Image (tube, rainbow, N blue to C red; front, side, top):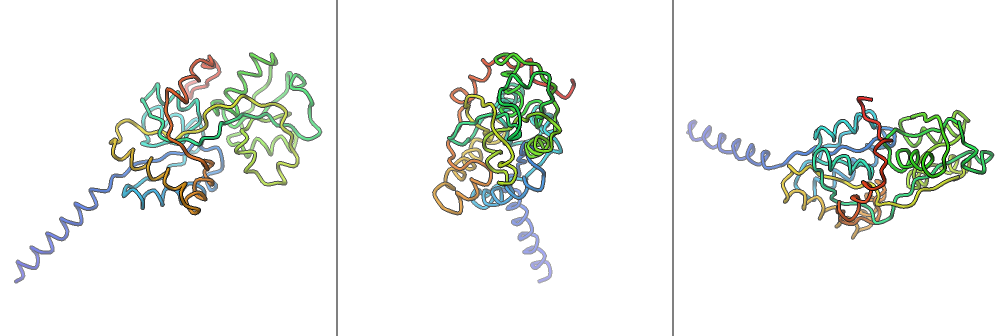
Length: 275
C-alpha cells in the first residue's frame, strides 16, 4: 500500500511538472518613455490578461533607461518588445525582430515650448532643447534630423530620460523647447499641457509596434496577436489597450510600415551606447 501511495504521488508530481513545463515563458520589454511605476501600472494588467488568454507567461521587463533598453533588444535579450518606429528598424537589422501589432493611428513627433516661448522654430538657434533620449524616434531622432536638415538650425541637445521629464523641464525653463510625441503629450495632466504650446510637428509615421524575436514559435506569436486584436472587441479590453496607447490595434508588417524609415537617411543621428 505504501509503495502504491508513493507511486501515485510520483505520478501526480510528474503530471504537475509536465503541466508547468508546457507554459512557455517569455520576456516582454517596454521602452521606458515614462517612469517605471507608470509603465508597470499601464502594462502589467495587459500582460496579465494576455497570460490568461493565451496560456503563455509574458514577464514584464522595464529597463532603467532607453539606452539600456536598446542594448537589450540589439543583443536579442528579450522575446517581445514594445519600441519606437526606428527601434523597429534597428531591431530588424540586428536580430530580425518581426513587428507583430501596432496602433492604426500614425505617430507624430512634436516640439513644445512654454506659452510665452518662441513663436518660430528658427528662434531656437543655439538653444538647449530637451529630448527623452538620443534614439527616441519622433521625440528626438527624427526631430533632431529635421531641425538640422530641414530647418537648418544648430541646437544643444539635453537628454532627460523620459517624455514626462522633458515637458516639465520646458515648463520650469531649464530648456527652451522639448521633443515629445502627441500621444505622450495628450496623456499628461491638464496642468502640464496648459502651460505648453506645440511649436513644430513631424509628418506622421507608423507608430510604436510590439515586435517579437524570430526564435519565438510561430504558434505562440499568433496566440499573442490574436489575443491583442480580440481585446478591441470588449470595453474592458479596449481600456487595457488604451492604457498602453494602442486603442485601435492592427497587425503590423515591416515592409509596409517600417521599411520606408530606412530611406530617411537619419542613421548619422543615431547614438549607440559605445559612443
